[in-house]
Amino acid sequence: MNWEDIKGLKFYLLYCLLLIGFFVYSGMTGWKWYNDTPTESERPATSGRSGHIYRYHK
Amino acid sequence: MSGNNYTVSCPTCGKINTLRGKSMTRALTCQHCKIYFRTGNWDTSTVEFVYEEPQALPIGARGRIDGFVYEVIGFTIKQEYKYHFRWREYLVFNPFRGYAFLSEYNGHWNFVWPIEEDPLVHKSDDTIQYEGETFHLYQMYSAKVVHARGEFFFDVFDMTASTTNKEYIAPPHMLAQEKSDDSILWCKAEYFKPSEIAEAFSVPLSSLPSREGIGYTQPFQSQYSKNALLIFTVLIILFTFIVHLTVNNTASDKVVYSGVFRKEEMADQKMIVTPSFELKDGTKSLEILISAPLSNDWFFSEFTLVNETNGTEYNFAKEIEYYYGTEDGYGWSEGSRNGEAFLSQIPEGKYHLNIYPEFSFTTDTFDLTVKRDVPMNANFFVTLIGLLIFPAFYFIRHHYREQQRWSESDYTPYE
Image (tube, rainbow over all chains, first blue to last red; front, side, top):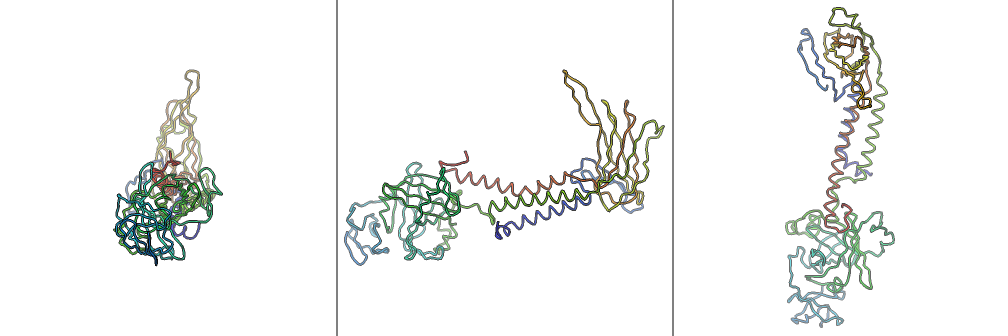
C-alpha cells in the first residue's frame, strides 16, 4: 500500500471515519441502532412539547 | 527482385518500392499491386492476400510511446487456427529502441516488445514469476497471416505459420512466447487504452475500433490496488474492533436499582412504584432485566420509566415465557425465564419505574434489575457490515470481470 493507494481510497477512508465516528457516538450515548424494545415516550404538557413519540428501534 | 539505394522492384508488377526499413527490410507488400514478397533470393515466392480490413494506423504514422517516437512500418491481420478469431498487429520501429508491435483485438491494444531474458526459468504450473509479477497461461495457439501491408524485418508470413504461441497474463502485462523448431522469441506486452493510442499517434479516437468486452490484459480500473484495499479493510476492521472494545470497557454497566416483587404484596393494586434512582453521566442507555421462576408459564408487564425532574415518561412492555416437557423420550424447552428491555439514550436525572405486572396462574413473583450504561455489541456488527459493503462490492465486481476476462481462455480458473 503506497501513497497513491491511500489517495485512491480517500473517499472510502472518509466514509469509514464517519461511520466509526457515528459508532463511537452511539456507543458513548447508549444508542442501540436496532432495538427490539418498542418504546413510547411522552413529555408533559408544561414542557411545551407534549404528546406521544413512538421510538421503535430507537 | 532487384534494386538499390533501399529500393526494390516488385517481382509481380515490376514497379519500384522505396524501403522505409532500408537494409533491415526482409519482406514487404508492393505499394502498387499489394503482392507480398521477400527482398532476398532465399524465397522468391509471392503471396496475394484476399482478406482485407480497415487499418486504423496507416503505414508511416508516427506516435510517441513511453517517450520514444515509433513509426508504423508494417501491418498484419492474423487468424488463429482453432477458433478462427482474428487480430491486428502493427510493426512499429524506432532507430534506438528497435522494433515492437502494437496488437489490437476487439478494440483493446497491447504494446509488445521483445525481451532478452527467458522468463520460463521461474515457471511452475502454467505460471511465470517475472519482474515481481505472476503471469498465468491464458492461451496457446497457432496462427496464420491473412492480410499484410507495409514492410517487415522478418518473413512474417512464414514465421507466423511455423510458430506456436503461448501467452501468459498479469494485467496490464503479458508475456508472449513464439516458438518454432529452431528458435524461441519472448516478448512482453502492456495494455494501452484506445485513447492513449489515439493521443500517441494523433489520430481521432473515433477512427480506432471500439472496445468490446474486456481485453485479456485490460487492468481492473481503480485508483488503488486490490491488495491495498484488502490491507486497508483488514486494518480498519481491526481498528473498529479496538474502538468497540474500548467503548464497551468504558461502559459503567452499573446497577442503579434492583428489587423483588410478589403478587401478594400488591393486594388490590394494579401498579408497583419503585423507589427513585439517580441516572448520572449524561445520556446513556438503560437496561431492565426481568427474571421470573416460570414453569410452563408466562409473565408480562408494562413499564413506565418516569423522569421525576421534567415528567418525561418512557413506556415499554416485556413478556417472558418458558415452556418445557418431554416428547418421544426427549426433553425439550423453549423460551427463557429471563428477559431484558433496552432503552436507548436516556438523559441523566432522577427516575422511578411504574410497573404494571400481569401474573399468570402459577407465577407470583419476579425480579427486576435496572442497569445504566450497558455494553452493546449489535452496533459493532452493523458497523462491520457498513464497513464491508464497499470492499464486498469491489471484490464481487472484480471477480465478475475476471470471469469475463477468462471466458475466452481454454485455461480459465473460473470453471
